[in-house]
Image 1: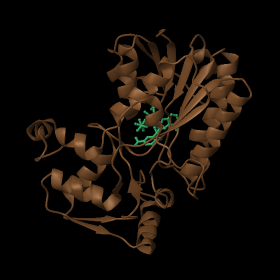
Image 2: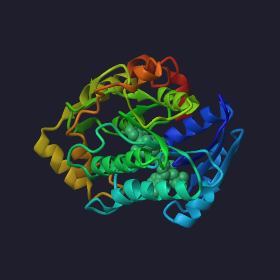
Image 3: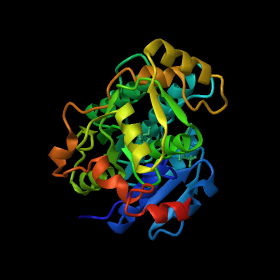
Image 4: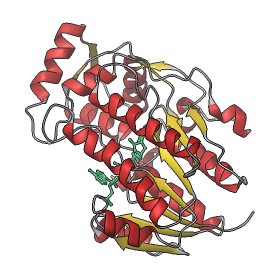
Length: 314
Ligand SMILES: NC(=O)c1ccc[n+]([C@@H]2O[C@H](COP(=O)([O-])OP(=O)(O)OC[C@H]3O[C@@H](n4cnc5c(N)ncnc54)[C@H](OP(=O)(O)O)[C@@H]3O)[C@@H](O)[C@H]2O)c1
């Protein structure tokens, strides 16, 4: 496998942290682009990794930073926008991808991997709509011969440092009762190590080939089952209550107004679709994915084999 010069946008986050380490182990040279260099400080000690502060929406800054790389990976994504109406989602997901494609052409970068999301382009949420629009831009660039591309569409990603299980764990710890919107929405949580393995295998191939890979773990859960399981793993006695849709929708509307939007109307709309695969891309990549119940207990609470370690850490 030949080593590549890889440029990662959004590499300072959860998936980025795992991916950057793996790419470094595989011998690639990695540039982590960040809007604020201290956000990526934890990666500066990884061999072969360079942190580069840049303004991703400034085409000149982006082109300058991208030049000299073989492959760009876009991990930028937001679950909620600051305002309303979808403008923030379009900027973070669509306009940024537009600029990356232009910058790749100007900077002679030949390959791009786009991190998207399962159900991109479906349903009524601004999140999923903007994800779908970004995918379309990437496919057009591929079919127009501008770029060799691949798209990943994971279900919810879990790992010791994720924001999904950790957020629910945090809520379960502080509240005797957890009201859940869309309790029957289904997920196939996918382990971050498997996602990273998928990236590594695709990058090791000669061409990305315009492929789209849905990525799902081996188990399908309803949201309520998943939170109840997590509660039990943490050894907590808590009531998890599924909300009927009208109340779940109202919960989204109420949380729209809470700073940081821990939940929103747009999240509610995304949850109207199940986060499960129709064609799990792991099969094509020869990867057998983990399920959450098989793996997560090793780092979760009281019943996990590392329970005492988790407690010390927290
Ligand atoms: N985690 C999941 O369960 C999951 C599931 C499906 C899809 N995905 C997608 O996978 C990707 C990585 O997920 P993640 O969990 O690692 O996300 P994350 O931890 O939130 O990291 C995303 C990174 O994107 C950058 N970013 C955030 N908002 C931005 C904006 N408005 N403009 C430019 N850059 C911005 C930030 O980097 P800087 O602050 O350093 O610039 C941030 O570290 C995202 O596209 C996400 O939507 C994740």
